[in-house]
Length: 54
Image (tube, rainbow, N blue to C red; front, side, top):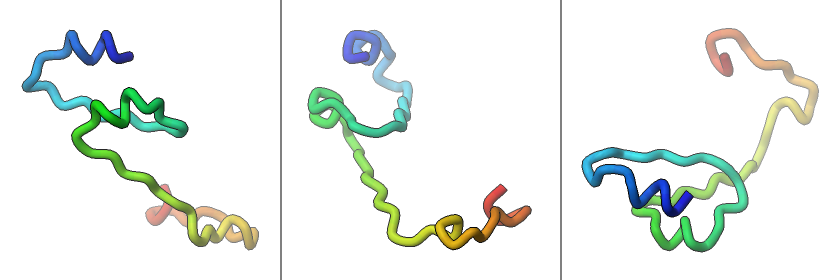
């Protein structure tokens, strides 16, 4: 992945998503966001709502 990133032109924006980011990518990133689940309706058997979740 790091080699691929080196070959991408500087003016190109790259967005990566996923979990368990290797330290090398953390150091290389300009922006890193960590999301944490606090509350999720599905845990109470509430199904997804059309035009809200999808």
